[in-house]
Amino acid sequence: MPTIGVIGAGSWGTTLANLLAKKGFQTRLWAREAEVVAELNQRHENGVYLPGFTLDDRLQATTSIGDAVAGADVVVSVSPAQHVRSVMTQVAAAMRPDALVVSASKGIEKDTLCTMAGVLRDVLPAGARDRAAFLSGPSFAREVAAESPTAVTVASFAPDAARAAQQLFQTPYFRVYTGADVEGVELGGALKNVIALAAGMSSGLGLGHNALAALITRGLAEISRLGIQLGANPLTFAGLAGMGDLILTCTGELSRNRSVGYELGKGRRLHDILGGMTMVAEGVDTTRAAYKLAQRERIDMPIVDVVHAVLFEGMHAREAVESLMLREPKAELWR
View 1 (cartoon, rainbow, N blue to C red):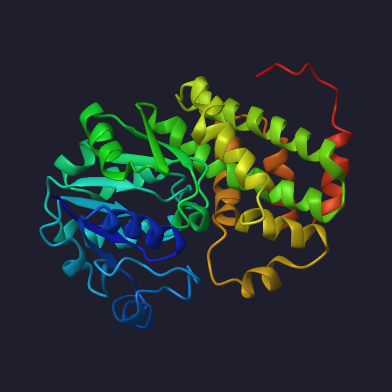
View 2: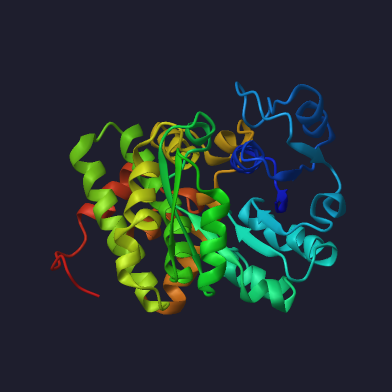
């Protein structure tokens, strides 16, 4: 029976740790906040990040990264994307060098433009680095915690690592597929958050279903163009980590990124919106990274451009819509 250390006690990290504990695995969950750890260990709840759920009493929490990963067969990385490098550098110093690392964070590092795969390549021991696996797909934490049927994908350069992660997380309500396209899975999971910001703006402006369908479809085209340029398999973007996650994040009311976009569409300022949030909307920093990547690779990403302009350049959401609609007419399929 494997022992597992889960790094990050936000809603998704707590949900995955609870799923694993319910399967009977010895699971230790690391949280930065002492009050979260105390509540997890004493009341078997995480009222800050996953309120309303009683967690398995076999799940143990700790504020010590060393205690969370010492001797663990598996390490699950679920920190916010912009903190993965610093947190996993500490993990790397304390973990077994041959442990299976499963990344469940979605984002692109805004300074280096690395996906989480790139970050982990930089910080993990060689044995763990070569076998890391990356979990993505349409999966709101609260619905998984409620055991609603969910399907995701896990990709790795090492097929045995992908299969091991699949077996680790598979349950009657959490179906896991495997794949080898790490780049595509990572980019799909990160970039959909940028399109979700745009989708939220559209809903906040009251633009209707036609506009939303257009944003999702053309957003997928932008993700695919950049992904193909960076070496991803285009078929990945028609799957769970691509279209699946994009649909969920652009339409679901539990989407933090859609919610931020919605408030922007209503005219609120980004600073005020983020100031009132407990959890991280990954799409904000991912927008910075996606904008830089598109410029570096010379890939046309007009939705990313206008989302960046709304977030960081003072453009109003309604101006962004006009900017998109008044672009030069083009063929639908082009690069």
